Length: 317
Length: 216
Image (tube, each protein chain N blue to C red):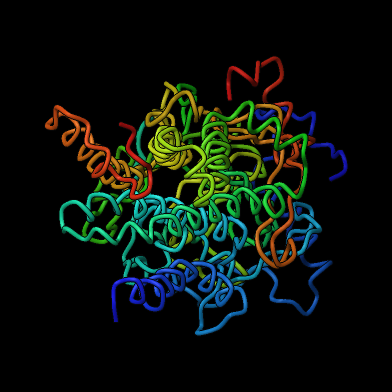
């Protein structure tokens, strides 16, 4: 990616969503004459249903995306089992409707919202992002969603809100993986406020223009493309604005292996394996996949490196 | 059919074919036969399947002596060498897949991995120990080494411990399956320990090797 003006902008200076929207609408209108254009996601649909969205080339990489099959059958979603094929096998009966999200903590607007209420004001866009797993494999995924920043602003976090904490549903009857204490359920993840407000942080409801398959974190998940995949909390039921750094699932499980920040960093190895390279999964990397160099911040350094200026990234891994 | 012929023409060929099934399964999956596939990450799938097969066959090799003693099948020892050599072959294939398909012959990276990553270090150590055991598995070497042959081949216990440890250490979080392997290995080694402690006199003739001559 080329260096963009966003690099030097402080999180507090990020364009307000209304302006941002108009800008995108203008781009969309210019680019997508004859295309679906912008539309809001009024009603949550079953997995696979077509979504209305615009494309956002500004935040898309040029690499060939992985197939829908790869993306929906090779998943780390321990709530449905620890094998990569478990989530697809065990999540088919998962109920994503009705769904509600509780907003709590240091914010002016709080309460429990239906998924419909959460999604209503947001126009959906497609962004083709890199996805880098902490296990040293990667994919290219065409997500459909909307900026997390736009959602956060609706809740008017107070000045005490320094972090946003996300929680995945806990329901061992539906999520067989939760019957074992592999992790300390429910799964909790979190971002620093400026990370959450960064335009690359995306709330996702779909992939390949369709409603997310359950195994990919339906009906509402986070995608933070410059961090290892486990930071991107799935099937979110709670958004909590907090003052203290959240106790995140993998960090609690093995603190010396998984830090709170978990920024993709080829220079900082996992204690048990190297992070210098990654295997691009599936057809995108040839029959056997292809080992490629891992990029700092997963290739988004121009956009996000400034968030961590002055921080020792080997300490805050 | 007498015992010799049964082993030669029935049991050994059956064990041989059984030991080849993991490779057959991988090949069939690779070619998409029977609706099987290697999944989105074929290298990892193959690497893990072959590695686990090495461990499985190694543990079955360690089962031969207890079965022989407990079931009273003295001749079952005749399939042990074949099992041991298959375990070695799968371990070697596992390493080859890691070297060629996973690391794409990036020798610098492989050497760094072996030196820096404890689970790879111990896995590689296990493979190295298996090499002299495989080389000395011939009848000729057995005769030449005499009693020392058995002492040398006791290193297989170390290999098994390193192998299970290697598996345990590379799992990200869910260690249930490696723990099952560890439990099975503990039973197999515990059996030998208990038997050894119960017998004040070492009885070489029943301690595992059919061929190691007793020195008088």
